[in-house]
Length: 260
Image (cartoon, rainbow, N blue to C red):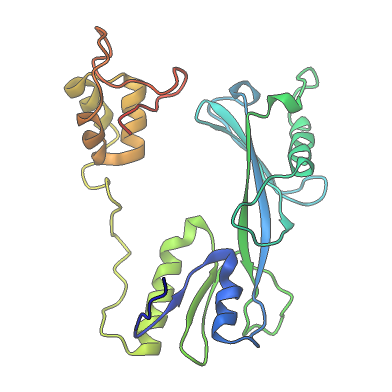
């Protein structure tokens, strides 16, 4: 079904699909998004120390590689290569082997880095952008740009996970100015995410004491859900064991429980 929706302002925040939406507004507009594929792999935990990570900004072909302990495992990445926009990006064997070859450079020669040790691999698309107002049109950036078309379409493109608040603030401020919206300035600074209000580093201890969760499970819930971890604990199933009292793990090696 199709519906007509009226709005004072439309914001295009579609990541790698930025240009396809911009062309719905104006078919002649030049592309500003250059999608780039990033691949990560997960390897056994023994590949890295439990409390130390490594980042190499100068690999064999100039791309950045990082190597980090993560969820009892080791996560390594990443590639950075031009890609087509797709809803289901898939890591290629070439990308996986590139990461493995770089990883070999950091480990002792007596450690055999094997393709069979790759437990998981995934690919994502970075929406790198060129600023349409920049004189240097070849400059690709990981920063974000906000543009407003002749029809008033507000586009936020580029950026990173770690700058989402700055991206949102710039976008909303631009939309308010361009469309004379009756709204105050952005309130993102100091605004806590769900679960942050009553969180503390020792919150997990209360989960152990009040609900009878394993310590590792309680730490996982507290770090994932913040003070909302209590809502998860309340619906955790009784194990039927002396300890833990509640919280059936989905897989014995990991702290994820059915209640999640």
